[in-house]
Length: 268
Image (cartoon, rainbow, N blue to C red; front, side):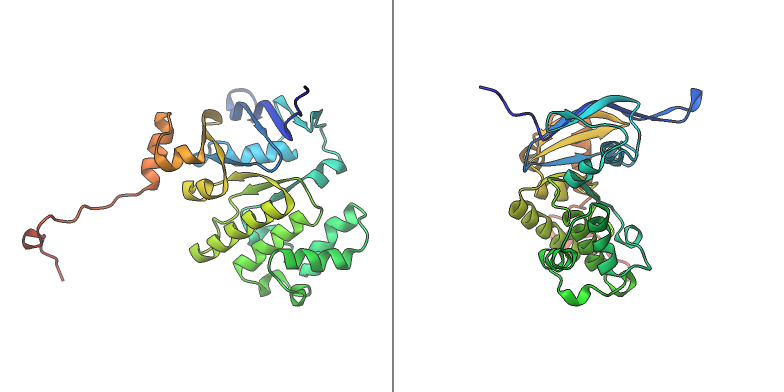
């Protein structure tokens, strides 16, 4: 019985910036697979290489070593048009990722025009509905939208081509906490509705545990551990670095005094 190849396979990815003694290894020998419909999280401190993985997949960060396979076929450099019908990306900052002088209608029409997809008007209206926005938003500009609405437009732009993989680069970090929850729930609903596979980059371990079944921990461009969201929730991760991240994410809570009679005095 032949086993189907992973939807996406990354083998020994390396990305280097600079030359000579100034060379920096942003990624060093990173490998992983992504199955259809799976959600994979990438976590680690700032500068660990999380976003570079997404940029390497899309070709925004040229590979210094390793290769990518999509449906068992090598991904070429530069990327071809058909790659971007299968793989789309949602960027971190909805304030920066949308053209300020284009209406929502123009923003959503652009990928359809590039890929020569017909019936643009119906596709745009449907895309807005899928992310919880009505047709009245079509002719608004980004500055007329809230941060959450802008990120919904960014998600609609990614989904309008009907990709199978969506790369999510800190999609909620620029949003208020209440709006973050709405966007995460929307992403989960869309994933189930369209059978999407996600690769999610986040500093927030709670976000990763909510949206992903499996996660990869990165540090200084290298893989530290591959684990599961269940292990993250119950604290059974193995690597010391992952344990330290987990402890740091819980913050510092000052213990309350055992007896109110001996509680420390407060300066008013």
